[in-house]
Each structure stands twice: as structure tokens, then as C-alpha cells.
Image (tube, rainbow, N blue to C red; front, side, top):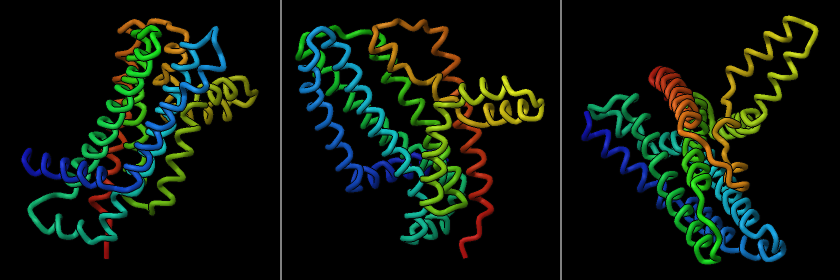
Length: 256
């Protein structure tokens, strides 16, 4: 069981690596990170803050877009190319195939995140600014944000088209960062039904704001481990639920 899983994971990683969009987006991210030094020259007094803010912001935007593209389209491409039928005709279950493809997707994003992080810290060291623990925390927690988004993309692509999956995942990204505001607004409503609805939406949406530590990195605010662990466990639990849903739907999908 473990050998086919690893083989499918590495195969998914190789396919994503060969994908032209992955290469283009990765090169684009590296170029933007290098170009961010031009923006820092405009602000002498807050040089290190601007460098951190721009670098982490570009890293986040590009990897989020890439995670949405890969997760929402990977299963659709497998079906279009008929490779899925070849694989599942062997003694490999659909659940194993989907989880391995998800692992390969996260491996791709993890490698890109690591490469961008090395480039970012190289920039920071080149300009003699301080490398802080908050920067490492922000980059590490970005991986968990990508984990949640990718799981939503896979859950949607298990039964819908690539366009629908990408649209819903993009909506989940924006709504996830506004989930706290949705909860506060609904709690102030006079209608109890509206309050319950707001709470239900709040708990159903991914709370991505609790995985965003870029503001702390910009202002060099340390974050205790006791605060990070619940956020990590939350991301893993949410992603696990989404993948379980994806497996349930994918194993019952009729490809005829």
C-alpha cells in the first residue's frame, strides 16, 4: 500500500513540476521577490518592514493562485487524458489515487515555498536587515493555509469541473479571511435565526485569518508556540475533513 502511494505521489509531483504554469508562476514569483528591492528603496525609514511585507505578500499571492490552479484542475486533467482509467484498472483504489495526488500537490507547493523562502531570506541577508523568528513563522504557517485551500480544491474537483472548483476555492479563500467579520456582524443582528446562520457559516468556512502571520512578521512580533499549535491542528483537521469528503464523492463518481 505504501509503495503505490509513494509512486503516485512522486508521479504527481513530477507532473506538476513539468507543468508550464508551475514553471512560469514560480519564475514570476522569483522575479517579483527580486523586484521588491526597488520598492524598499522608496522607504528608507521602514526598509526592513517594506522588504518583509512585499516579499511575504508576493509569496502568498502566487502560491495561493498556484494551489488553486493545481488542486482544482489535477483530477480534471487526469480524466481528460484518460490516465485515471489506466491507473484505477490496476489494484489501486480511487481513495489511494486521490490522497496520493493530494500529497503530490502539497509536495510541489512545499518545494516551491521552500525555494521562495530561501530566496527571500537571501534578500534579507543581502541588504543587511534582521532575520526574525516571525518571518519563519509566517512562511511556515503559509504552508498550512495552502493545505486548507488545496483540500477544498480537491473536494470540489472530486465531483465538479475545473472552472467550478477554481471559482468555489477562490471564494473560500476570500470568505475564509473574512470569516471573523461574518461572525461579528451576525452576532449583532437582532434576528436569532440570522445569528445562528452566521455562526453556521463561520464554522463551515475555513478560518484562514488564524493562519495569517504576515502582519506579525512585518512588525517583528514574536508568536508563542502555544498559539501556533492550535492553528496548525485546526488546518490539519479541516484539510482532513475535506479530503475525506473528496474521497467519499470521488469513489462514487460515475465516469461513464
